[in-house]
Structure formats: C-alpha cells, structure tokens
Amino acid sequence: MLGKLIRYDLKASMKLFFLFHLVFLIACGLGRICFINQMDFVNSSAESLLAPLTIILCLVTVFIVAVSICSWLMVTFRFYRNLFTGEGYLSWTLPVSGIQHLWAKIISGCILMWIDTIIIGLGVFLLISGRNVTEAYSLVAADATEALGMTISTFFFYIFLFVMVSCIATVISTYFCIAVGQLFSNHRVLWAVATYFILSFVLQIGTFLLMILSGFFNHYMRFSGTFSEQLTHIIIPTALFSVTVTVGEYIATHYIIKKKINLI
Image: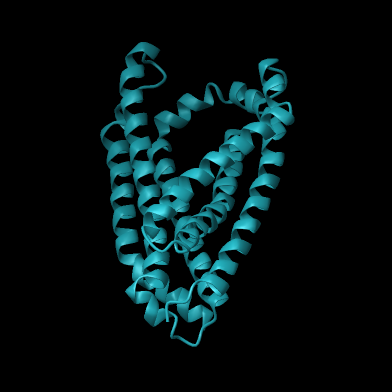
C-alpha cells in the first residue's frame, strides 16, 4: 500500500513539475546559445565581461531559486492538501496507518526534490559546458584546484551530494511545521508559517554557535589551508546538528499525526 501511495503522489505532481523544469532547461539552453557561446573569455578583458556575466549570473540565480521554490511549494501543498484539508477526510479512511501516510509523503517529497536538484544541475552544466568556457577554465584550473584542495568537478560533486542530503532535512522540516500548525484550532496555515520562520531562526542561531565553537571563524580569518579544509571545520558539526534536528522533527511529526490529529 505504501508503494501505491507514493506512486499516487508522484503521478499527481509530475505534469506541472516537469513543465516548469522543462522551461528552466530551455532557458538554460537559450542562455548558452544566445549569450555564453558568444563570449570570448580568453581574449576579452575582465572589464568587458563583468557586466554581461553579472547579468547572466543574476538571471540564473533567480531561475534556480524560482524553480527550487516551486518544487518545494508543490511538496508542501501536496502534504497539507492530501492530509489536512477536505481531501484528508478521504485519505484517513484508507486502510493505511498514519506512519505509512507520513512515509509516503516523505519518500515522494524527497524524490521530487532530488529530481529538482538533478535537473537544476543539468541546466547549469548545459549553460557552462561550452568549449569557450572549458578552454578559459583550463587556464586557471591549476590555481583553482590548489585553492579548493580538490578539482572543481570533485568540489561540485560534494556540493551536489550535500544538497541531495539536505533535501531530506528540508522535506521533514516542512512537514513538521505543517503538523505543528494543525495543533491550533484557528489560523493553522498561519501558525505553520510562523513555526517555519521561528524554526529557521533557531537553526541559524544554532549553526552560528556551532561555527563559533568549532573555531571556524578563527581558522577562516587566518586564511590558512585550502577552502575544503576550512569548510571541514563547520560541515561536520553542522551535519551532525542537522541530523539530530531532522530526527527530532520526524519523531515529533509522527507523534502529532498519530496522537493529536483526527480528521475522521
């Protein structure tokens, strides 16, 4: 039954999901053909490239943020609508336990967020994989590798893995906020949004404190070591902190759904 729930959630979201991701890929392709491929990074001066590269970077950032937010909103609305609105009355009459409903939403939500990350990665690769870009990068590849402590491809691979893992934390955190909102008798959506912002603030403070305790700022200000070595001072404790918070959010969400919510 869990598999059927997952397939149903994915089927209900895929058409719109792939539509705006297709638009993103088309925009990246057009950006490469119309702009990136027309730029000479080797022979042009830095001053002449600054303005167009800044505009392109801003547009790409806006597109990536917009696509990511749309994917997150789809996952969010699907969880809320399917379990806590009028549709939820039907969902809870199915011969499925609360934990199965929760895991179906977690798995389907993570799948959508993972696909979103992969497509965004493909779009960025499509945008910057032209010969003029690779030739220009080859001139500074040695310096970039020395500064990063690894090749640029390895660096982006680790970033990709980090984002993929972060998708799990994002999905569970979102569901936790929605579940907390359902504990209130009125303005449940508003309380869910408030919980999200409060939780985000608390996590930022916690991460900042971890950076202080791990000595990240002292190490960074000395500019010693490679960039990857500097990040190691914060990534490991932050990852452990994130895992702890995510597990706590899952336990709380499971408890709320099982003990505190009854739409039937």
